[in-house]
Length: 475
Image 1 (cartoon, one colour):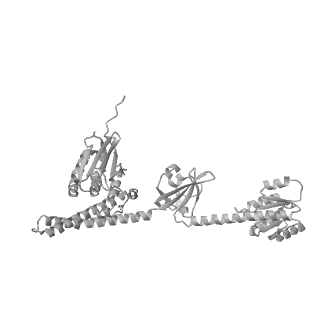
Image 2 (spheres, rainbow, N blue to C red):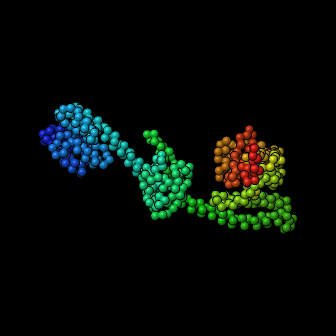
C-alpha cells in the first residue's frame, strides 16, 4: 500500500534525506519545515502517516503531536517521532503525548521500511472497517422505520435517520443519552415486555408502533436494538376491512333470511305438495343456506372479536347446566350423523366460573359439531367436566381420525384447516377453532388440544370466580 507521508523537520538537509528515503521505499513524501507548517498542511491535505522530528525550535514535536491529535477528526493517523538524542526518556514522553512509534536518528532504511509496511497494513484494515461501518450506517439510515439502540440501563446509544423524527414526552427531539422512560413513558424492563407502544413525533403527532426487539452483546455489555414500525396505516386498513366485512355480512344476512324463510314455507307445504325430487333439492338448498348463515355469523363474530367490539355479559355460572343445554342443542345433529353423545362429571361438586353463557354455548357448539363431524357413525363423543378449588375444565373427545401432527401447531389460527381431503369434503371455513380460542381467552379461560392415543380431544379451562367462592375458614 502506497502511503502519503508528511515529513516534519526544521533542518533542510535532514528533511530532504528522509523524504528521498520515503520515495525510494515506494511512498509519497511531503515536507514541512516547522510544527506550524505541519499543522497548516493538515488543514487542507491529510497525510496517511507523519514522520516528526522531536527537536524543533518554534514548536517541539511533543506539542505538535498533541495538537495533531486535536485535529485528527476521528480518523487515526499514525505519528512516528524521530530523534538523535541518546536515551529513551524523550521517546517515552512522546508516546505519552500521543505518538504511536519512534525511530532513532540516523534512520535505518530497513527498519523504516518494516514500520511503513506494518502501518500500511493497519491503515488498509482500518479503511476496510471504515467502509463496512459506513455501509452499515447507510443501510440503517435508509430503513424507513425508526431504529434505535439502548444500553443495559435503557439509555439511547444511537439511532437512525428515521428515528430523528421522534420526540420525547416533553416534545423535545430524540437525542443520545436520553432514558427510554423519556421516550416510551416506561422503564426498560417494562418496555422489553411490550409488543406495541405509543410514540410521538416532533410536532406533537402521536401514533401506535409495533416493537421489534433484539438483544446482543459487545465486549460483555448488553445492548437492545428496537425497530419501531408505525401501525397507523395498518390499523386504518384493518378498520376498513372490518367495516367492509361487517357491511357485506349484514347485507347478505337480510336476503338470506328471506330465502331460508321461503324455503321453510315450501318445505312445510305452503305452496302445495311438492314431488319427492323437489323435496330432495329443497333439502339441499336449506342445508347450504343454513351453512351460509353460519359462515356469515362467523364473519360477524370475527370482525367484532378482532376489532375488540364484542360485548361480553359475564357473571358467575355453574357449568353443569350449561353443558346439559349444549348437549341437548347438538343432539339433533348427532342423531343425523349416527353419533352418540355422552357426559361425565356433570354431577360433580358445584364450582362457579365467570363467563358469558351465550358465548360459552357458542364455544361448546363449535367443539361438539367438530367432534360429531369427524366421528364415524356408531361412535361416541364424550363430554367430561372436572372441577377443583382453582377452576373447572371441560373436555370434548371424539374417536375420529385424530389431529395431523403437522396441523396441531396452527390449528387455532385463522382460516386453518387440515389438508386431508376427508376433512375438506366435510366442509368448514377454518374459523371455528380460531373464534373458539378468542372467545375462551376473552372470558379469561384457556383452550388446548390434548395429547391422546386416538381421536381428538379439546379441553377448556376457566378459573374459579373469586367473588363467588366461599371464604376460607381461619384455623
